[in-house]
Every structure is written in structure tokens, then in C-alpha cells.
Image (tube, rainbow, N blue to C red; front, side, top):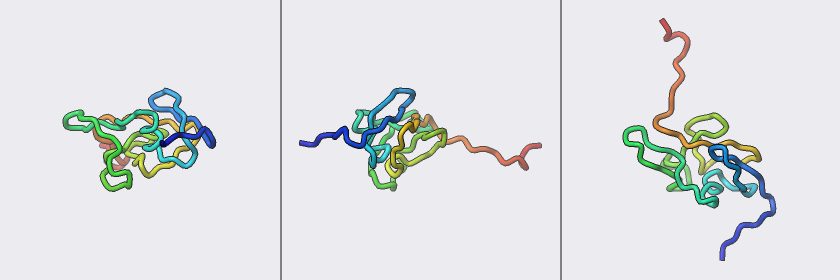
Length: 101
């Protein structure tokens, strides 16, 4: 039987809710262990997406991590105090200052 040890545990926050994670886990693994499977919704239809390949190939697991959008949660290790939010729709791009008229 698989279990989760409290050894090396830390706290992360998903949409303001404190969750327990294990040191060394990826963000995706920590969210899945806490029964959170949806990390983003698609821009065209709002369809839910979450960790799928767990190796960085599909980009379905992207989320906003510590304010940075489009972070692949399956490749990002957890850190104590990390803040994660679902990414809703397409990532917004900052326009360079030279484009302003």
C-alpha cells in the first residue's frame, strides 16, 4: 500500500488553501496527493486540464506559481510557502514599452 510520510513535509498554498506536501515532490505530485487534479482551464472553452504526462511534454499541468504564469507543475519542485493558482485561459503577455503609441 502506498502511503505518505510526514517526514520532510512542508506547506504550500493552492488558491489560498494550505496543503501539506513532501520535500522533493513536484508541484503536480503534491496537488494530486491532495486530490487536486485541475491546474488550468483552456482559453477557448474553459475545459479543465491537469497533470497528464508528468514529464513536461504536454503542458496540460501549467499553473500560476508564485505569481508567474504558465509554470509546468510536473517539472517544478515544491518549496515551503509556495503559492499556486489555477491558470484561467491563455497566459497574458506583457507588451514591450516600445509598442505604446
